Length: 334
Image 1: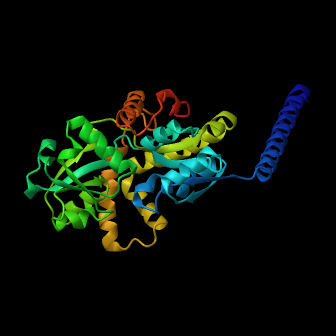
Image 2: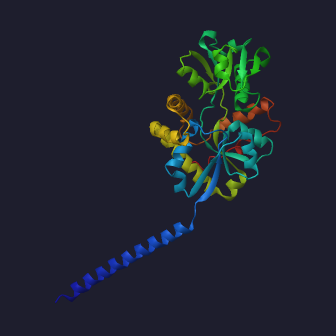
Image 3: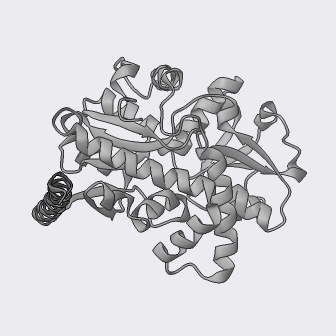
């Protein structure tokens, strides 16, 4: 009888049994931990109504990227200026907003900070019908230009454009037309209009209009939309910021890589989108992706922040000097 062989076999069986019990216990402990750790509820304020331009956020939610980070996210739609005030008081931890608004807020003492760059290009442009013959910025002199308002990103973009191309506002008849740029251009009530690059130019081109468009990002580097939080959240809950940034970036990456699948997810998030509207909004998403692409995704360009702060100071929109390094951080972009 081979006792050594028997002992060896028994030892192997006991070892296998012990390992199996260890795995079961570990699984039970993991399940208990998962049951005890409820998802962290987080609100992300969007600054606008549900829209196809928020597709990366919808993709991140639909595919469980926030959930995988232990976050239960609610999207809250509201006006951007109010959102930054809520961020400053830590009533909110996150909001989507533009870089120029961060500069304005910080200059007024609001401790908000940009943690993820979403739009690499500033989506403001000046649009005219091709028949107007406005092919160079200088040809806007003496013309009537429509603007949605005398505030906000569109107006700041317009002032930056004038500054960069050397035009004087005194030589242009600027009229507030609300959000009627398409109708105002089509009906020739204005010679040109300040537009959102992902909206009016796409709509009018789809309707067959021939256009001339001056895209602001070809003239200046104003920082556009991204994810904003506040200094307190960064200091006391950096892991929360890192999780939110990581989840959103996954949604952004997927949208750029798979726009058709991403658009299907966006349609579910915007149930009022009918078939005729969907065709146009699909074109909007394609154009939006052109404004989102960057390498690496999510990282802020220090030079763009320096230019944004300097330009707003030069235009008299802020009275105090703002250090560009106080406006953003790239520490959460991995």
